[in-house]
Each structure stands twice: as C-alpha cells, then as structure tokens.
Amino acid sequence: MFDSETSNRRAFLGVAAGSVAGMAGCTSALQGSDGGPTTSESGTTGEPGTSAASTATGTKTPSGTDSATSSTRGSGGDSRDPETLVYASDETTSYGVDLAGNPVMGSPDAPVDLYYWSDYQCPFCKKFEQDTFPKLLEKQIRPGNVRLVILEYPNIGQASETAARMSKCVWRQVREDDPMAFKRWHATMFDEQKKPNSGWAKTQNLLDITASVNGVDASTVESCLKNDAQAVKASVDEDERAGDSKGVQATPTFIFDDPTSNDLAPMIEGAQPYPRFEAVIQRAKS
Image 1: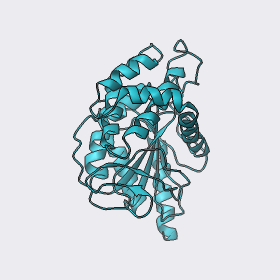
Image 2 (image 1 turned 90 degrees about the vertical axis):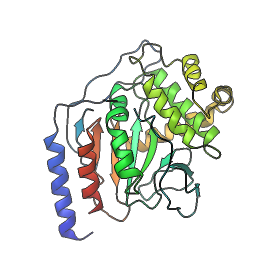
Image 3 (image 1 turned 45 degrees about the vertical axis):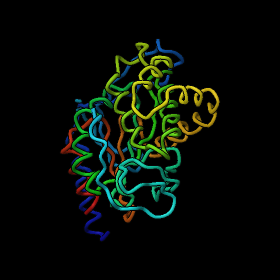
Image 4 (image 1 turned 120 degrees about the horizontal axis):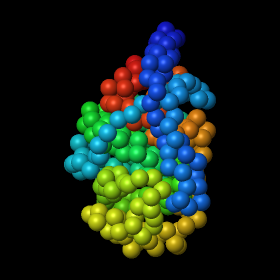
C-alpha cells in the first residue's frame, strides 16, 4: 500500500475510533463458578496495542441459511468443499493466527481477514449475532470480500469456559463431514442464551441444547469434553493468547487484517451496527 493510502487509512481509523463512544462490550474476569459477576460495560475508545479501536452495540441471530455461495478454493491446508461456506484450515495466517481448530467462513482468497473473538454468555455477542452478522454474511462474507475466523474468548464466568470448550468439541466432530453444522450450533447457542452466569450454560444444559442441533451428536461432544479435555482446553487457551497479544480486552472484538498491507489492523469492540463494519472493510481493502 502506498504511503499516502496508509496515511489516509490511519487518519480514517482515528476518526472511527473517536466517533463511537459510550458503547459497551462484555469485560468481566473469568470466575470459578456460575455464581460470579455478570458483565461490566466498557465505553472506552482508543488504540490498544497497535490497533485502532472503536466500541458499540447492536440486537438479533444468524441461524439463517446454510446454502453456501462461495466458489473459490484456497490453496494448501484447506479441507474445503467449494459448496461449503464454513470449512477447516491448517493455515497459520500472515497475522499470526493458527487456524487449526477454528471454524473459518468465506473465501480463503478474500482480501480481508476478520478475526472474531466471542463469549457464548456475552449479551453483546448475541446482539452482534442477531443484528449485524446476517448482513455481514450476505454482503461481505458470501460475496468473497471477507474471510471470518471464529475464535473463543471466555471472559465472563466458568460457564463461558465450558461453552468455549464445547464449541471446540463440536468443531472437532463436524469439521470434516458437515462443517455447516457448526454454524447451526453456534447460532443456536446464542438463540438460547440467558442472563450471564445464571446457570443456563452449565454442561448438561448446553448438551441438551446441542442435542437439538441437526448434524451434531451430543453424546460425541460429551465424550470429547471428557476424553479430549486437555486438547480442547489448549485450543481455547491459544485463542485467548492470540486475542491478548492483539489487544483484545472485551467481547465481542473484531480485528480486520489485509494480509498484503503492513498497515495497522483496525479493531472494532462491541456489537456495532453493520455500517461500521462496512466502512472499516472498505477502508481495509483500499
């Protein structure tokens, strides 16, 4: 990217960071039981680490259509059917994120990577999933403008950690044969979300919800939680470390990266409405 473009992009991101204030994300520290605190609001804006940040809110879920439209096949490491929107990859991205163990959505050749850290107990994640994600999916991910990487950041309570590990087990089960089942499970979890740390995300209830999702075997997930506990914990921990290294402090947090640019990777914190995402994506592609 030319120096003038870099300068303009940085100037834009600074404006974006300062223009959306007083919004919120989920920032509570991990607790040892479901009886811990719920969420605290973060209304700050600024530049954590090397990323430009902005915060916001949003409301509604992507259960949505499972028909995929992306037809571009990526190189090396992708176990991807061209008719499948969600797929697995063993790639380590240019931004330093290892995709093994994480669902990827959209064309592997998309010009912008979007890293999405969430907590299944976070109400602002639910707001994003229901209000903003359907538009982001149809207008940016399906057309091949953005590749979305789903990452875990359980920061509210122990039940958040349980849900994050279950997410990893679901992905392990479906990634090869029915990766779109993960999208259905992910959406269902946010549909069924209740007040943080209220008990809704205890293991048995999450397994009961899982049993209702087409294409996911709850008994296999339960077995994974017991028999592969160390591996799935390590995968969640890796997601958290990746987030910490990039300045993630709340959920949901989104970092946009153009792999061909050395410019700062813009960050959105909180459940912002779709136009905020569209504006950052357009600038990231320029």
